[in-house]
Length: 53
Image (cartoon, rainbow, N blue to C red; front, side):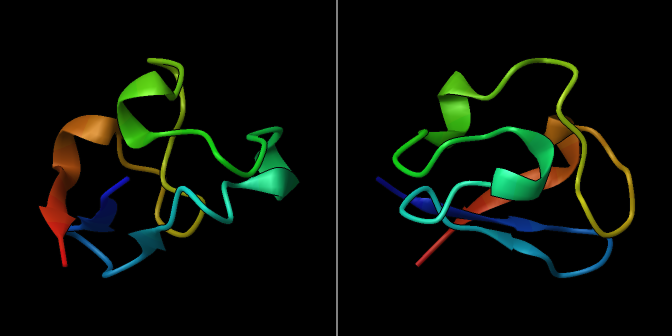
């Protein structure tokens, strides 16, 4: 599973960690995040993320 970086603030979504503070379980791939999920740091939508290494 790829990590994704927020183009606005630099937050990295790591699917191995998920986003437990916002109800996203570890092991949740970025493409499986709900459409209403927002960056936990700056609040932008998934459209503002790109895959990273």
